[in-house]
Length: 218
Image 1 (cartoon, rainbow, N blue to C red):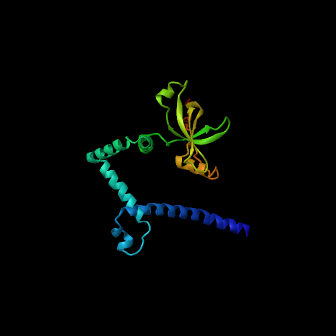
Image 2 (image 1 turned 120 degrees about the vertical axis):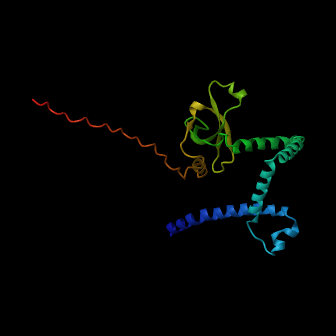
Image 3 (image 1 turned 135 degrees about the vertical axis):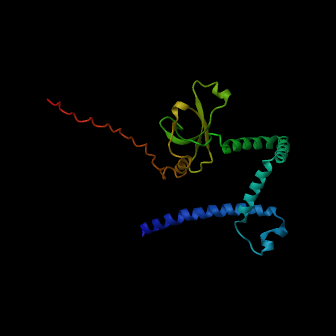
């Protein structure tokens, strides 16, 4: 009976958590339907609620915002909006910081969160998984004796919180696992092992045999 109960839990726990997360996301995105006038909402037009329309609405909002921001007129509107937010002391600090982090992470040329690393943290001979976020600022790098890199060390099981540290490049080991595999390994507290990345096979060169020697004719 114990074996059957564990087998049942292994089926329902992942399924239940997945359904709960999907329900939470759909419920949160359905709040975007409140932007539509009350008389035009699906509940009023069709007479019943259709779950998931918030996903479509959110996608359309993101797409329309991107189209507007990509042209000259939209860029001027955004510049005016940012100038307005820049006049509010507390809001200015939050908005500018979040924008710079978003632009750095979402940029195709950025190296942030592109490499999984193995670092000694929080003490010597204690290793954990981290992610490279970039290099120290020039003012900080000038104070260091050797090349350093900026590293984000996530916490378990919630990787959205963690520690920002700068470590010598010589003391950091780059892993072959992908960032997704490293995140799964951190979130699962080491239970879900990443796929083994076997080294490339070494091919031994084939040396042709020497031609047979023909005895001289007397």
